[in-house]
Length: 365
Ligand code: SF4
Image: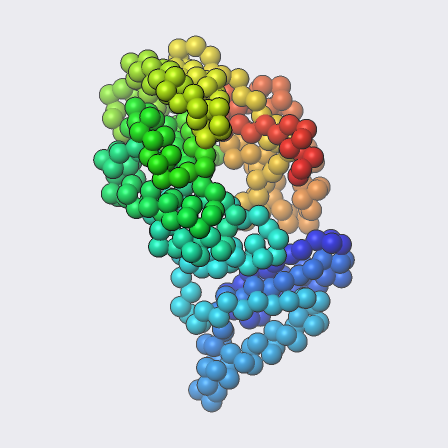
């Protein structure tokens, strides 16, 4: 852990010591620079009326400093929210993000954008980049997909964040309800000042990522029924229409492709047509270019480990006292890596966001 920086976020003074004091002491002894970020003042920690809340807060802070000295924690930051009034909203997340950023982390905010305009100043001080979901090019489509009349607010939010100098990427998941609006989405994002405009296709089949929101079954059967207006995949007639929309976008926005404003290449957009056609059994799925299981790992909040969001779990951090470096080489992990490389995983065939990192990107990691 020598040279590593660790930030432990906790609600109250002494929480972190109970949860992970042993780990913190070990990492500090190994040379890590540990910072505690404590969100509340801990003023409600007493079980007697003989002391005031201010006295309790002061006592717990003093105890925290004593614990820090014993464990080797270098610094403690107090956000100072009143005890019992912590709300897990964007305000708290931005306050925490700001401290991560101050410690040198690159902070990326993924958001629906509905509160961005109100929190633009805080976002500008707290994050390095913002990714905003932009699900429609018209207010009606946005409302139909998101269930809220929020498009003007989202676009105002993008403008406000851009005015603060933070780069914004819009991301649209293309599906039955919005594919015709690609030109309107590009127009709206461009007028709002977005730096990049990105599209991906809807996932209707993955058991481990987004598919369960629809009606995927254990055999990864794809939902694509023209008779069901709520099904997000495209019918054969809609696929043909989508192909025309893509060609129109490629022809009309050549400048946006050339400048990188549209993140995907024309060929990648055409592969999206191929993907929707294949969902209907018309041709093969586009071959994914991906090395995600060899270059990254997904760690879930309970320590569950996956090679990517779409493949099954291969282990759990902490189980059998495994370290991450050991867990990623478990036989189950190796078997999954071999299977995806050999083209034996159905999830890869239908994957909506394969991730390929070339040698230059890997050297920057
Ligand atoms: S193609 Fe998709 S499912 Fe397959 S390994 Fe890559 S990210 Fe995972």
